[in-house]
Image 1 (cartoon, rainbow, N blue to C red):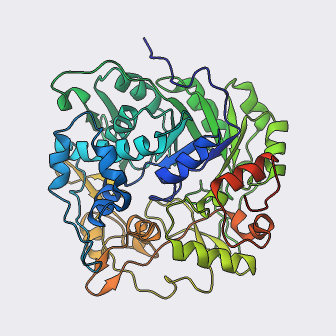
Image 2 (spheres, one colour; image 1 turned 120 degrees about the vertical axis):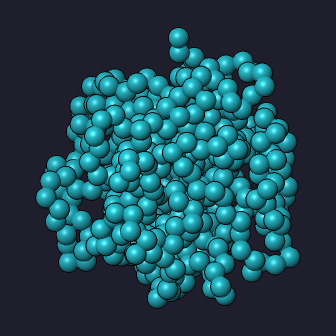
Length: 481
């Protein structure tokens, strides 16, 4: 038996707000979009670390602790308090670090991920009846199941996942809705003999008495090829409730071009006809779909609807609105330069430890330009799993010190040009780590739409999420609300 989706009878949104970065698509942004009748989405990446850093910064407004008071597993709060050391009187103090995930995480470590997701979704849903989603990267596996469960405890309505093949997630959602054990096959780098190890999560470990079943959220797979979309709809472990068709102009991680890799003069990947999704075949799959990447305009929405899509997913316009979690000084700086057509979005083949192409924003006042980044992996979200010589599972990251990565069996050439996205993206959200007198530089990512954002701004220096929705839907022009 499969539990009914919470929003099964609700009309489909024509706009999905992208689930961006670490804390960029925060609860304030998702809440603002959902209150306007569209699908607000929180980023599910690094929510446990983000929770700790908000608390250590003093929890301005008391929002985090308000949400924590509603968490239905109160003994989990004790695990959190062990790592929170308020630093409100010393902004130069280092943030606390959570234990890195292992193959089988302890219940206490799982509860931190559950709590982080619960807080973000609970705050996004507070005070309105709109739908809220959470976006996770399939590539980040160890925290996935506890993060999903924590979001479901808060009543999340949609789960969106890309950056990989999330074939096992729909079935996991079915199980978690009934508080049943779920597992994911761990993707390993390199050859694997026999059955791959599993990531296991059992909700029953965290309860003295199980509550009633939860609503099963709708699942939207983010894909970049017709073949992957077809495979997921037909072969996933549970129902695929929709697809987001994402093109290579979208921000963050992109799929690599199909076929032989070709680069332009700037070292960016060249995409061709093989990378275009056949929307007619997508329509034939019989599930609703949205189009993402370069669609952030009224014309983009109109073209998507004309092609049979339910609507569009938009990231860049929302990333720079007042409610987003991007640090204020970065928003103001990027937008000021965008008006002068002095921003450039570059697809970097080496920046991400994952090996996926990654969009980087370049502009004259970028505080990270020329900065020296300390090579380390102390957050660990983007680590790759591998089998050690003794057959156990280890984790390594091309962004950590080269000698350590090589000692773990990695190739030294894979470390060239790699950056710690985990720390850099947290800095972009206003929570940079302090390192021996230096501050972690930010990493700003956006879609190619950023280079045309002046057409939307029309002389404005700032705007709200509501302005974006009114602009896209044609309710009003882009004038300030």
